[in-house]
Amino acid sequence: MTHDFVLPDKKGRSIEYDVGDETVYAFHKGAKIGEFSLRVIELPRDFLEVHADVIDLDAEYRNAGIGIQMVQLAYEHHGQKIVPPDTYYPEKESRNTMTPEGLRLMISCQKRGWVTEFQDQLPD
Image (tube, rainbow, N blue to C red; front, top):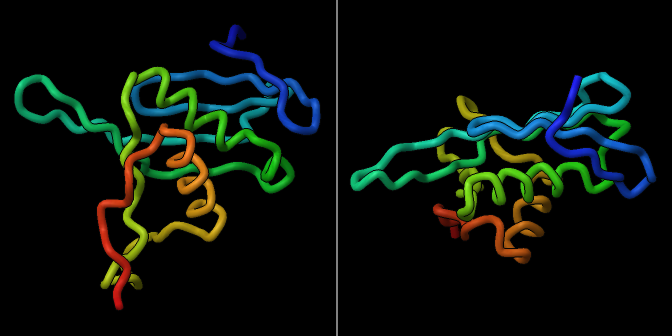
């Protein structure tokens, strides 16, 4: 199988990435280890918004720069900033919210210019 990109992670492992309009997949030694899913929303005048939906990475591959790499590849693929998930849901019990790790990832990617500001406000 041919992958779009092969890049080392912070631990020196060769990670393969496949990049599409709505998903970035990460593989190691042929096994899928991560996925970043996106929602592409069509707006008037042929404008698109690209929203981060879910990023999932196998536990043994976390904190190795793979999540950041998936966000960067999505940003470069679309040529625009990714809109992050909301940080707060009043109906929390019925919605998935970001994990602390996901929040740190989105903040880190905001600092790099790949992700927009959060669209919601945390409650007072």
